[in-house]
Length: 197
Image 1: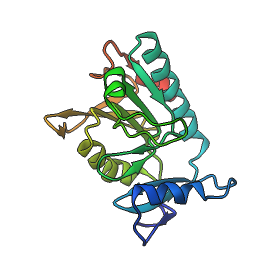
Image 2: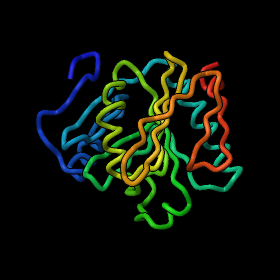
Image 3: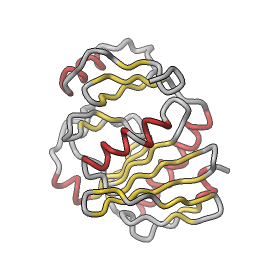
């Protein structure tokens, strides 16, 4: 991967347990994000303020909607997921329905979740766009994430992939002038421009 895509990919391979111990030994001053993809540690530097602002809007919208309709739990980008495929990912925002939460293995607070989310949102940035569109999309599909939103702040649009018989649909593109409707969030009507204004 080139420098524009990521700042660090390990040459050594790790299991999820080894990765967790490695992350726990990072200095407190380390502000980078780390994920385990195909056994390798991938480090991404902090994104710019525009990415964080869009992320805050996504989490606020999802959190408010899910709480108001009592649908489950919403998490921000600080939550790691140990996926069944062996990867550990940290999406920008995620939602787990009550049904999935009840079925999935429960872990102590402070541990990575071992439940594949119902919905994942990734916000594209120069450091992550290629990986979000290809590798992570494949991993979310493989692990049964029912809906995957790719938010593009530069194009002011959201592409939504829905899981049908184990495969993602080609993706539905919602521009800033449109309203996004979600299959996994019944009644959801997100005015896409509200994420970017």
